[in-house]
Length: 284
Image (cartoon, rainbow, N blue to C red; front, side, top):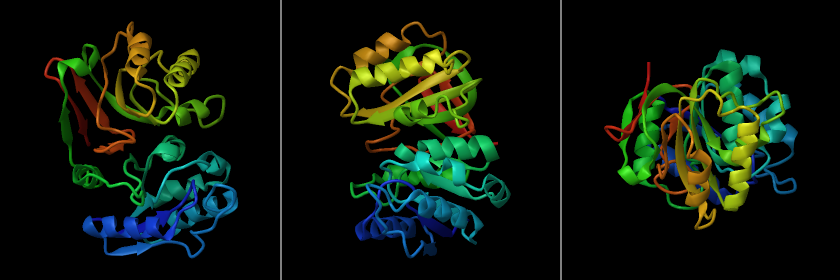
C-alpha cells in the first residue's frame, strides 16, 4: 500500500490553498506522509519558479523515500524541464508520477525514456472540486486494479474492437512535442486526447499536425475525452477528422478538464469494444 507522497509544482505557480487541498485529498486517499520543498511557492514569470528550481524538484522527488510523486496543479512550462531531468535516476527509482494537462509532456517523456509508471490523473491541488469517482479511479490505478467504463451508441465515431498499450493526454502538449527528441510515440498504441479552452479549429489543426507527423499511421484506437470550452462545434471538427479512420474511435469519455476525470496509466493495456460498448484498463 502506497503511503508517502512528494508534491511537485512543475508548471504554473501554486498558492498555499493548492498545497492544502492536495494534502487534504491525499490524506483522504490514505497517505500518511506528504512532503514538498520549502521553495515550492516560488514565482518566476507565470511559473512555479525558474526551470532549474522545477527540474531540481522533480529529480529530488525521484531520489526521496516517497512512493508517489504528484503534481499540485497544471498550467504551463513543463516543457522547459525535459533537458534537465535525470532519466537514469528516474529509471532506477521505480516511483509513480501523477498529473495531467501541462504535465502530459512530462508523463509521456518519462514513460518513454524510463518505462516507469506515469499516471494521467487529477492534479490534486486544483481549486475546483474533484469528483469522488475521480479519486476512486485514481486509487484503483495506483494499486493496479483493472477498471471498465461503459459508453453509449452516440459516443461511437468509428466501430471496432481493439487492444493495445495506451498513451496520450492533452492534445496541445502532444503537438508541442513534435520535432523534438521527446515526441510522443503512438506506434501500435491506443491514443487518448483531451483539452481545455482552445478553439475548435485550433484542435483540428493540431490533429492535422499530428497526422502529418505520422502519429495516426499505425494506431490501434482513439479515446476522445473532455474538450471543455473548445467551442460548441468541437464535435463537428472531431467527426470530420476521424470519419475515415479504420480503427475504433469513441468520444465524450470521462478524461481531462471536467469531472469525473478518470486516471489513465500510460503504457498499460486498454481494450475498446464498440460492440459491447465499453473500454477497459488492464494491468499485467
